[in-house]
Length: 105
Ligand SMILES: [Zn+2]
Image (cartoon, rainbow, N blue to C red; front, side):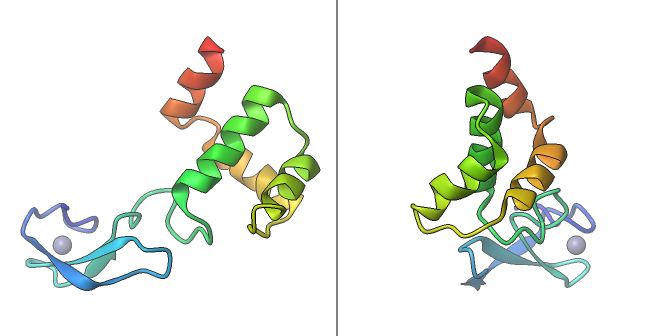
């Protein structure tokens, strides 16, 4: 995994993972520790990337309401508000895979 801070390729994977299970690595050049989401728009999200993108995809594809989505995922054990869905939609609506999937359906 290249360093998200200095783009060096000499990184060493660390045994420790983030709370969400993402791999961490230490850069050989700048000595900073990052994970798979460091430097992306998904950094600091409280939920896994695939879950957030699935929520946005379902919102766009099936035209579900913000509250319906929060309730559907609550039944699956994920607790977030309709405001979180609104925020995720605004931030990730232009992720390439999401746009491609909604255009062709
Ligand atoms: Zn680095």
